[in-house]
Length: 184
Image (cartoon, rainbow, N blue to C red; front, side, top):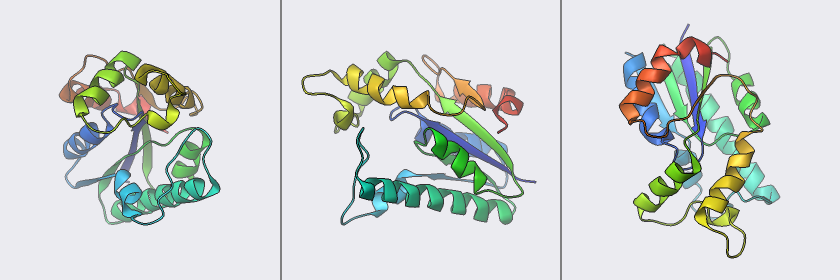
């Protein structure tokens, strides 16, 4: 039975860096996919997620989650371990795992400190990923805290890691050392 690992957490938590490193250590064979592939795939009419999402944003989000679960299942059916990185929160985590059949499911939630996320986000030098979560005049840290509250809605299962101060390699080592605790 193949492993399917969902690595989730906040924007700038390290998901996109950790997932391929984890897949490389799980396999061979192993594959990985970042859910942003499907987010960026909507090139006309994209509707982003906000604290008060539109029906179209929710529809596109559900399509993205369905797509990543379908790809994970496809690779597992072909004999691959699979690691998906995406921001999946609340009851959507449970629904994502419910789509999978005949796999060993694992959840890893990356929870670095607000300060660490702010530092990483600033270090990216691009657009503020938290702008839709910041009230008028609020700081980036306030926006991070607003989205971070959504993490609390994830069922408290799997492996939750405060990765503040860890290198990506240290995080992957910790995940692999505690993989049984990540079992969904």
